Image 1 (cartoon, helix red, strand yellow):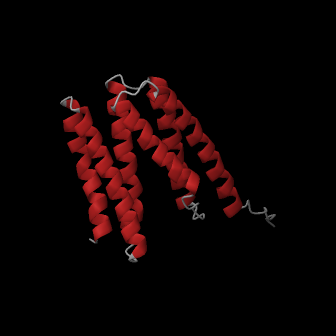
Image 2 (cartoon, helix red, strand yellow):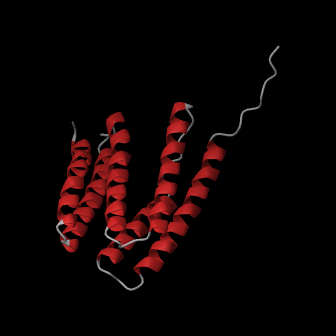
Image 3 (tube, rainbow, N blue to C red):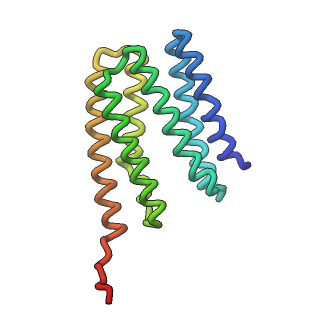
Length: 175
């Protein structure tokens, strides 16, 4: 257990903390828990890369912690009526598609597409959308849909990059 993995583990702990605070109706403190999770995500990645502490467990648990926190926030905002079923469905569809593609790629032993600036920008934009929703900004719903659309564009860019990294192999005839 190194520091980056400890920070990732902390994100798992923050999920029920977030739920408890959100359910009690304290929107701003709940949002601050989401921010804390985001900060630990940035820190664990930075520390792991900078100090050579990247581990197989961390590579697996880090994105899982991120997705579980994001799914928790999406469900809480959906159930509380802050976002529509359509928005939640679009976000789930995209994320589940990305998870499924990642798993298929992993089990087929294909090269993974590293995070790019569009993926990182998409994450920042989602956090901004969540902030606007929590603070009830008048444009929050419109901005969320812009982010959702951008996230699908980012997904297509990743898919194109994946095909470049893993070109189809020519089929050899069996004799």
